[in-house]
Amino acid sequence: MARKFTKTDVRPWRAATRQGKTLRGKDGKPLNTFKGYADAQKAADKFDGVAVRV
Image 1 (tube, rainbow, N blue to C red):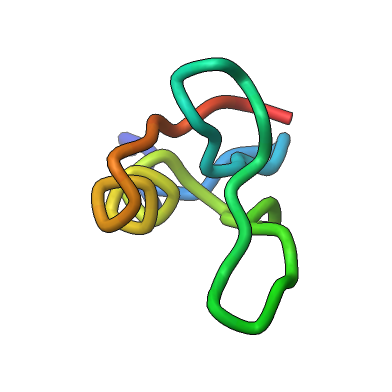
Image 2: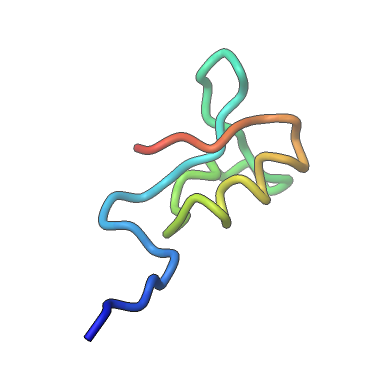
């Protein structure tokens, strides 16, 4: 039986600027608790950033 891909990783992802600094949301909290690449990249696209592993 094949494993189903759940789009979650063991290590969390964060949204960062192209210089490597963690992006922050409108409330000032860091965007660093995403469970997968897709979620982190979606948030990073809003701020012209990239998704990176923590």
